Amino acid sequence: MDYLAIAVLAQEAEEQKNILLPAMGELIAGTLGFLVVLGFMARYAWPRIKQTLQERTDNIEGKLEQAERDRRQAEELLARRREQLDRARDEAADIVEEGRRRGEGARRDIITKAERDAERIIARGEETVAAERERAMAEVRQDVGQLAVQLAGRIIGENLNQQRQQALVDRFIGELTGSPLSSRDEGVRG
Image (cartoon, rainbow, N blue to C red; front, side, top):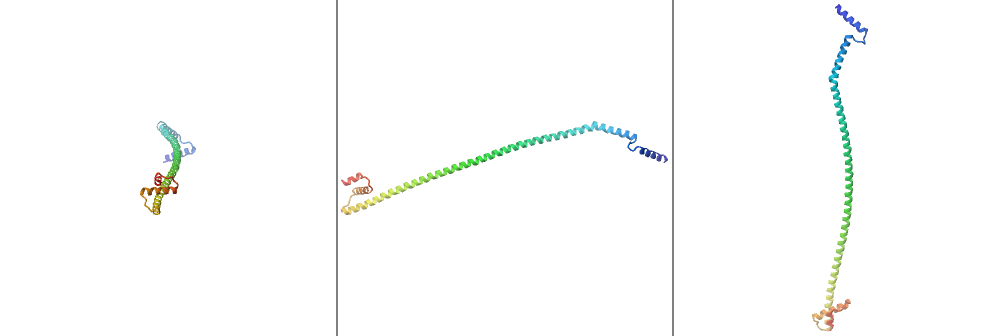
């Protein structure tokens, strides 16, 4: 055991001498191991890492480009929608204005038609009144004429025949209204 203790003590003495610098064997083994790992990384891992990073970069750039295209399309679509909305508002305003004009025209047409209808009704009423007046006047003339003939017959004392009676009535009415005598009146005189 003495040898083991001496080796451990020697080792400790060596380690205490230079704590920053590892033992030469460890340094060589560590350097060789690092170079092997570095060579492996450079040969196999680094191209794959570089490829993966390039794919990620391409993917991100593609997504950014797609996002930019989508943004431009969205702006174009928004501009088209705003334009369509403006056109729709203009069309709606035109439709409202056209409806207002048509309504105003319809109102004028209805008023004009109502005025024409009122004029026709008034004209028909006036015609009806005039016809009724003429009919009433004719009836009154007839009644007055018959009364006058009856009165004349009583005064004269004789009955007049129908033709003579009618001629007398017409002459009497003509004198009342101031109209000229008819040919029948002249026959009654003669």
